[in-house]
Structure formats: C-alpha cells, structure tokens
Length: 149
Image 1 (cartoon, rainbow, N blue to C red):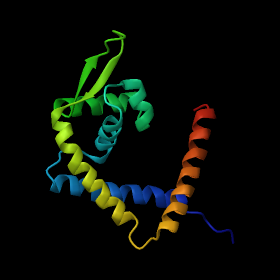
Image 2 (image 1 turned 180 degrees about the vertical axis):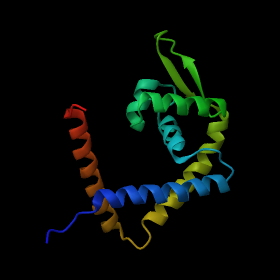
Image 3 (image 1 turned 90 degrees about the horizontal axis):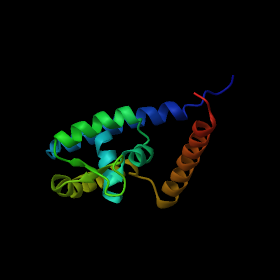
Image 4 (image 1 turned 90 degrees about the vertical axis):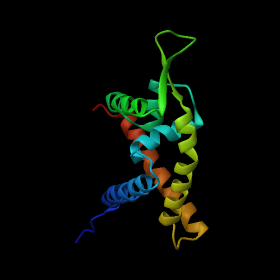
C-alpha cells in the first residue's frame, strides 16, 4: 500500500493553529490586528513608504485582498496612504506613530511564537527544517510563476 504524504495538510493545520494562538496573544496584548494584517505591517517595518504593487508582492496577497486590509489598517491608524512625490499615479503606504509603538510588542510576540515552534528542536534540526521549507516555497513559487491559472 502506497504511503499518503501529509506535508501540505500538516502545513495548513500548523498555519491555522499558529494563527489562532498568535491572534490570541495579540488580543491579550491589546493589539487589534490579525496575523495577516501583521504580515503587512512587518513588510512596512523593513520598507516604509512602499508602493501598493510592491507590498502585494512582498506579502503574497492579491491586490483586492490587500486593498481591503489596507482600508482597515488605515482607518485603525496603523498606516496612511500618501501620493508618491516622483509619480502622481503611485500611492505609497507609510507607517504611522501608532504602528511604530506597536512594532516592539508585535516583535516580542513573534519571538514568543518562534520559541514555541522550535521547542525541543536543536539548532541543526531548525536549520535543516527551514532549508526544507525554503525548498518547498521555491518549488511552489516557480510553479506559480510559470503556470497559467
């Protein structure tokens, strides 16, 4: 009998459970964002004043999904949209003071989640596991970029 591989199923389940745990940690800390919104903010911490198209690529979110999330984040005061000084057609996404205060707490909670993920793993196992995940990610990215959906 052929063995069923469960990698994709397990990754999906881990994503669900981790999202619930992280969401609970955010709520307990008084942060009114979900993990997907946090992913947007994480990109902004590394590249502030970023065009929406570039933000969509870096977060792997579709433009319509991203736009509605940006609307909520903007109305909550975490970011603002500003016109690009170089190109009137381009809108840049910019961090706010509220986001800058939130970044430290979010980063600490992310570190807590990382410790939880890797509890009882040694450094070699972590490095090997992450190398495998990166290969899977690269396989899927290559397929997505070459496929006609």
